Length: 105
Image (cartoon, rainbow, N blue to C red; front, side, top):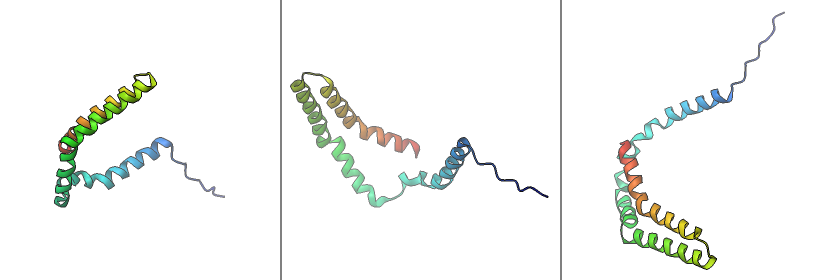
């Protein structure tokens, strides 16, 4: 009598490797996504102008002031630090995102 051998189940490492391989193959073509789509150029320019212009600066300052006011009311510096971190991220975030995306292209 011949015994039927059952397949050995894949380990977690093998499944993770297979998933990463499939993701690389499927999403490899999306690496050119930053160079296509001229129909979104005006939207990109509008949002970048808002984020890096006076609206972005006003929101960053407002985040710090709200955090400072809440911190003063509670008697702790933590909300002010959160507001400061939010202000810094909002101020430099668009430049970092554009640098990352244009660096890949």
